[in-house]
Structure formats: structure tokens, C-alpha cells
Image (cartoon, rainbow, N blue to C red; front, side, top):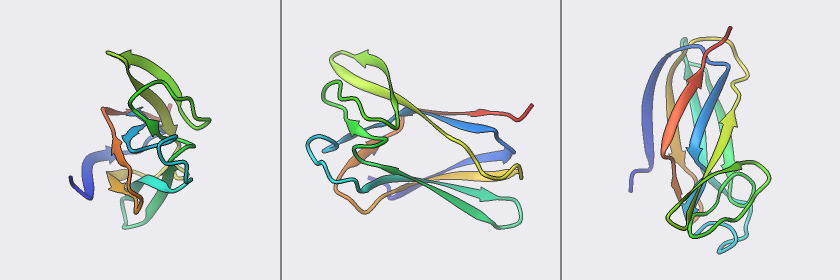
Length: 120
């Protein structure tokens, strides 16, 4: 599996909405509050901003519905859960790209879709 994936952005964002929030070998299979995935924002000008998403807080195992406080149940996919969560950038600068970086733990995070909410 890839260690990271980059998504072109080229716009400022009020929020980044993620559909996924599930992983293989995630909570409660592994209950450690380790980083499963980091959402790294690469801004114009070279600045970066990391948003670490943790197992048992933002991510849960996909195998059945398991609620965690940092994401919400989105829908059931033939007995497997898909969750929703939001990342809010701290800067209003243009984001050149969004990088999804696998954390150092043993989970296998899944992201189904990424959408941006633009500033008003």
C-alpha cells in the first residue's frame, strides 16, 4: 500500500471533508491511540500544516459499526461501516495540495472520498 497520496487542491479551504474514517486492524482490534493517518496541507509559499488522525479517536475498524468520538457514522456498506470526519485548516492561504500520509501504526486507513468546503 502507498505510504502517502497527494491530491491537487490550488484553492483555500474552510474545511476538508473526509468519507472513510475506517481502517483495517483499527479500534477496537487495536485500542492504542496511535496516528493512523496524517492530513498534511501544503500551502502556497511552502508552509505545511499537519492534522494527525488517531486510531480509536477518528478512525475505527471497518468490520462493523464502532463509534469513536472524532468521526460520525455515515452509512452501512453491506455490514461494514463508513464514517465521516472534517479537518479545518488553520490558515486561509491557498492550499497547493493535500497529502494523506500513513501513520506509523499497524492500521490500514481507508479514505473513500475527499471534498472541500470553500471559504465564503
